Length: 258
Image (cartoon, helix red, strand yellow):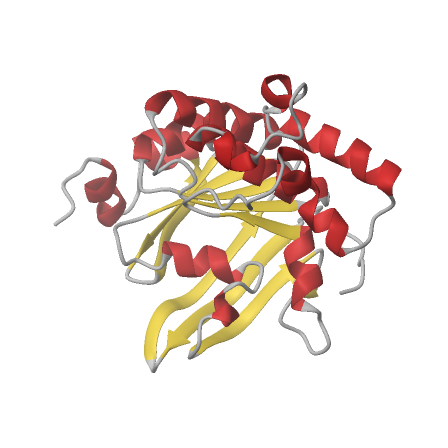
């Protein structure tokens, strides 16, 4: 994947007429959405509405599932990531992803954070500085800086999730996708991860899938509501959560969804 210039309006990531079909069943239908620079967009909706499928299309993770067909365009800095000759590995380096459950490897804290850098054979001094910076940005540095050789498996669940964020940040992506990253965490750990998300949204584009409307209210500046594979409504968080225009959105955010 080449390094194109940003779009004229500064847009880093946008989706145009995106549809996803799995075994002849349409999961997403004609979704178009732009993600502004330095923003956190929360994607919300009922179970089975296509939230996870949608976020997985944004860095080509969806194609790892057999039988998935993606139609339409996902533009990163104006270039279609599904275009001919585009390397999906490079796509996933520039558009990182953090999953629902922490996925740390059975190695040290340092080597977990450095994992992506090792793959691309980054110089050792560059690895050291990138890992330090990533752990600082993820909000984990002060807790682990004196024990980087310790096994990552010894960390708490919340610390492991922030380590996963650090691992994604170490390769300096412009976009970070998070698929319900706090659903397996206790309230204290959730609060720390949310604080990390808020800080990072001042630097890069973030897309958060969450089933928790309260979390969307706390950390996002925009909300996109999906229902049955369709983008029903998108806008500033306060507008969507307090003054939704569509009855389906109103039912969902008030807990009256049947």
